[in-house]
Length: 406
Ligand code: PMP
Image (cartoon, rainbow, N blue to C red; front, side, top):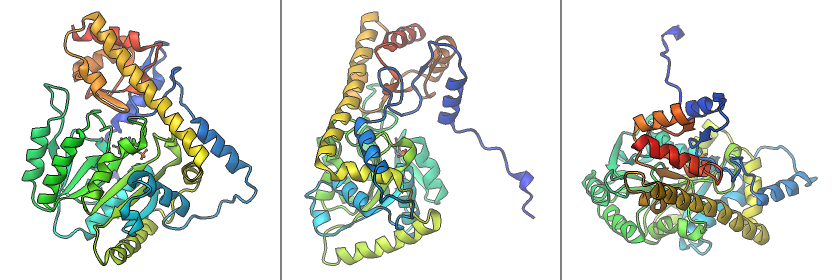
């Protein structure tokens, strides 16, 4: 028999545990800076106006039914998703070097990629993550039995990129390693390489025949500009890399619970690229079938409508600028408040960092103190979700930070 009573208790997921603690707190001044989900200036979830429109269109469509999607998902969605990340005029798309499967959002895409690499990547590769990285990367790749290592990423001194450390570790990794890269708006630090730094990284990855695995969870959400946020991925594709991409629509379309995402595999240019990609797609389909059979329809339908309609797409770009703009405004407000208060330390990193998160530099003791005395909730590593700040609480937060660092 199994002896099921021998199964040990697993720890609670730290982030979802933090959310539960926040919900249980009855103090009216409480501030949620934990989960990475966009909030409006009233700290409320925001359904993008363009998503409301798409929803309306779908609900009024008499032809809509609840049939299964194909194994690879909704084709009008996956093809538009590929264009979105690679660029509509990408030679990789024109040369049919891309295969795309709809996944259970970004998480499912990382997992499908991990499962595929675990089964087919030659040798026994190690996957290298930035230190720190999105905590789920560790569990996902462990679950598919790919050994894990890290490269330095965040400099505690500058609260920016440890570029030298990063380069050294990636060039010191065994040839043909898998290098996981955040396409933009690095989670949890908010620190991205510059375009020149990406070029240097591409050179190193090429020399070492490493395999880039891009995780792209914030396209358009980071800068408000879809092309700018996809720059690194497009540059690597231009350089002829064979690579894969995990793409999420959770943040940029605000479709968190609908689980809309995509996994793309791009092969390098070559005479048999098209057949290679077909074989890869066939294997991905088997993995997908055994795990989820076929992906959920609703979020993909919403995304497909928006991505394939010129007017809706334009409106989406406006919505993206609303979200990224509010976050950038909050970065300015927080930095200015802290500087006004003369809070010990430097705070430029708040505005240098980009995207959903800021790595504040607050230590665990300070984080716990903020929770205890000010009812402010953030992860123990000092990461704050910028979207949790608004014009009503930014001063309260800055003053609380000022108190705990003194
Ligand atoms: N990768 C990174 C780096 C992320 O920050 C996230 C969202 N927290 C994801 C992947 C996946 O999120 P989702 O499954 O909601 O798309």
